[in-house]
Length: 268
Image 1 (cartoon, rainbow, N blue to C red):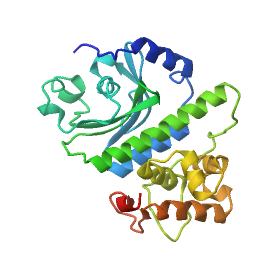
Image 2: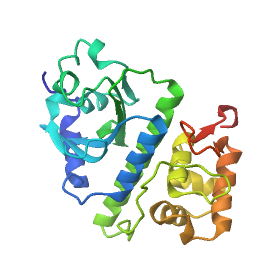
Image 3: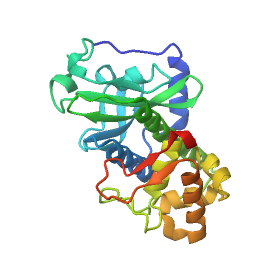
Image 4: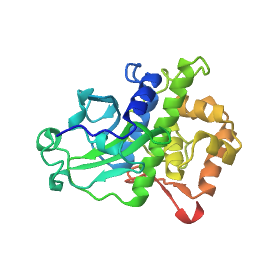
């Protein structure tokens, strides 16, 4: 299987080098987004990946902790970066191009793949946020829209990384608590950082768009997402909840719900 290269590969690789993300320390923020994706879509594997000229770098993963780099020619991500939209493979074994892929024929036995391209500027796709299953499955347009929204959250984090390297932002996410248990969307409790991220993904909102809708500053929203809701006043959390609920997001009370929150598309 040969490597695939987009027509602007030189510019894409230059953008990846400028970002300097591959050799950066592990990111708790990217880890949290992966956990949200894995739990929202009920899949065993989720990952944030980047492609250089020969390799695929798995920058954050859930379900494949021992793999950090693979050959580009064996990556599904190389197909994702050829598209602006989410790239979906319902059953890799039924795909003549992918059936012989070593990660399909061997471990982990990939059958289903969906990847949102990480687009940092028009036409520049550095990698993907992907969800993977070992069983074939369908992926509906509304699910693809949610995955694309989560991909935008990854790009938000890449932008913050760029600002930090340039000395233009001072965000400390190392102390952010890790989600050790499955998400439980309890209406009686304050919104968690994971819920806010997932809600933004459902609405396909950036931090700035949530700030405009809620009247809460973008800085405060980023602090909540990095450090949790107990770092700000309850009134701020309530304003964020109201903004999302006004636009159709429902935070369900069932802890074992498949998704945990939903959206009424008529309200968008």
